Every structure is written in structure tokens, then in C-alpha cells.
Image (cartoon, rainbow, N blue to C red):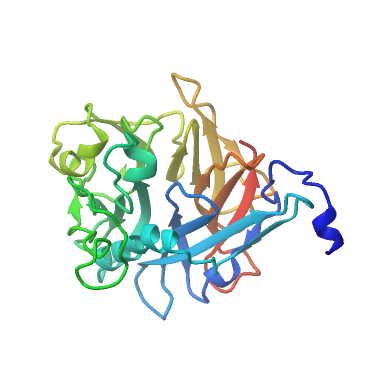
Length: 339
């Protein structure tokens, strides 16, 4: 028996490293950015935009990231080759199908995905396992517009089979993307994200000149009807969020619980686009705070997303950057930030 196995379990919680770390083999020599992760455990499906393979446009690519901490030493580790147990295969395979469905000859950017099972519908009755709502932006018809696709089933089937053209999992294909007309304009609109209550969608647009952060207040919609009701909405109140916007470009909002993160090239940063965060106090967003030199550089930092895990003392932030030392162009990075 090794000495390690005799050591007591000293750590009930892990800590994500507070030093920015390149995601390694997840990245390519081409541009990789604009990622999203649905709410999962320590094996996370990562959907992001990439020009890998020498593409001239961005397409969505699916990879996986797994992380863990040693409860004896507290050491953190990660890689992109997780153990693919049957449950992981069943739940995550359709996310790759989503990429296949939405990719076009245009640029696909800013994916935002929610799991019906984990994020939206938690009634414990009909399990919407391996079913997802995906919002994204594409310039396939000219300017950037926001689209929706999903593989929701009114009467969900199980996912006990992963092989065969008629297996239950293979039936969970995504529908053709449809534009969310109430969010779109004749300018560029992208990077949609729901607030904590799913009652509003925040997004970025340059409809007034520079890129600002906007909020669309939704009518009351049951989570099981989002995929059918959102494309039909017409007169929705949309406002620029003055407290988050500046005279510069403010882009890529992402909300987790009461924290909003975004990127901006506003004055006072470290150079190029920097990452900022703001906290919701119940009535308004706080003045945005720069993440500082532990995260930002003189290069561009772009599209931050957060994932919170209860077994960790802090939360994981993923983002993209073209800082020196990467594989080429924009790479994906991770860092632990305070909850």
C-alpha cells in the first residue's frame, strides 16, 4: 500500500488555480474562442468557435474538458481526454450534433447552451435528458443575427441506446436554426445570455454605433416552451444597459447567478480588450470592475464564461486571448476567480 493512500482526506473542497492556464490540446494553431459549457460536473462538454483546419470562417467545434482535485493533497489537474462512461456519452453526444446542424459558410459565434434536464426543467417527472437549447449568432445572411436551435422533445424518450440509426439517443436531433427576430436589427447582434431567472436575455449590439450591452425583458414563458415561444415574440422591450455600456465597445456578456462578465476596450484597461465583471444587487448592476493583471494583458481577452461548482472554493472562468505563448491566434484559457 502506498504512503499516499494512507494520507487523510484533508480537502473537502478543491480550488481552481488562480494562475491563467492555456487549455492545451483543446486549442489549435488557428483561432479558437467563444466557448460555452452547460451545467455539468467534472466532465464538461465545451462548444466553441474555431477556424481550425485553415478555415476562413468560424465554425462550432465540440471538445471535452475534465478536471479534478486530490482530496489528500489538494492538487488540481485537468485534461481534454475524459473517461467516456456510458452516461457521459449519452448526455454529451447531442452537443456535437448541434454543431453539425448550425455550422454554415458564415461565421458562427458566441454559442450559449442550456440543458433542459439540468438548467431549465427540474420537475423530476419527465426527464429531458440530453436535450438542449442553443442560442448563437451567425452572419450567414449578412450582418450578425441571433438564432435558436434545440432538440427538446414534448414526450422525451430515454437514452439507453447510443448505437443504431433508430436508437432513442439518435432521435434527439436538433431542428433547423431559426432567427430570434425580436433581438435582431440591421446591425450586428450577438452573444445572448439569460439572466438568473431566465426572464431576460442580455446581448451585445452595435445598432447605436459602438457595441453596447442590451437587455430584452421577456414575457412570462414556461421553460418547456422557450424553444417554441422565443422565435414568435414580436414587441419586446429592449434597452441599452447604461451601467454596463461605455463609449467604447462592450461585448460578450455572460451571466451566472448574480455575476455578469464581459469584455471591453474601454479606457483604463491593460490594453486591447480586457475582461470585466459586475454584480447584481437585486435592482441594478454594480459598476464594472476590471479583473486586473492576474487575468488581463496588453493583448485581447475575449468571451469570458463562468461555471460554478459547489465542491470548489472559487469558480472557473474560461476565456479566449491572443496573448503570446499560445498555439496561434486566439487560444482558450482558464482561471479560478472568486465566487
